[in-house]
Image (tube, rainbow, N blue to C red; front, side, top):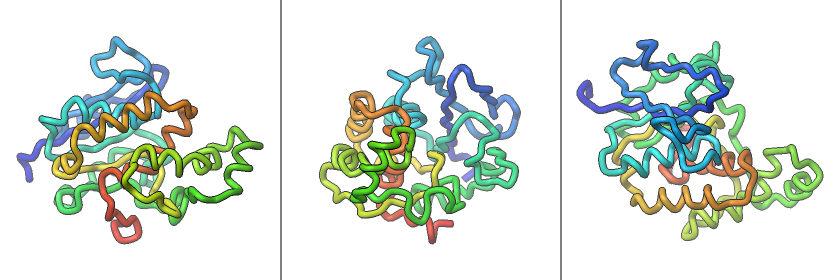
Length: 228
């Protein structure tokens, strides 16, 4: 396990106070790759700043599909953030506690085990009230995400049945093994990114649709209630 290749994939924006965990010496055994979302001149950048972290994650997978490391951690670049599953909201202990043998066994795991927010149910695609709430509350990201989730899910997964309810810890941070990523062809990830590039949905909504779909893309059997 010590010789396994490990990459940290992180995303940031120029105006944020990005903390480079690699330079801090927190994870000398990991290689850090930091995508800057709003700088096309950055060494690691994305085609377009849309969909929050998912654009960076998908871009890394597509670009490195043929030479992925054994383990990948997809994370936000800032060390301190409220959705880190730590009493002090510190991202370093979260990754230090990550059990790679478990990741290798199951393929995918969310970095957040706290059920609030996101569990047990965050999105009910067929809920009629969400469309009414979205119409009268355009600032309500939950309602707007729920209102379009069913249609978006069918576009992303045309061969899958739209779930009646979706529950997964929020935050968009997770670990995944290479073999699990490779269960899908590169074309699937390219199609997901094309959907993100082409959708007319607001950035906050498209990002949340993908945030609550990662476990569907990478682990159809993922169950947060037993995984944690």
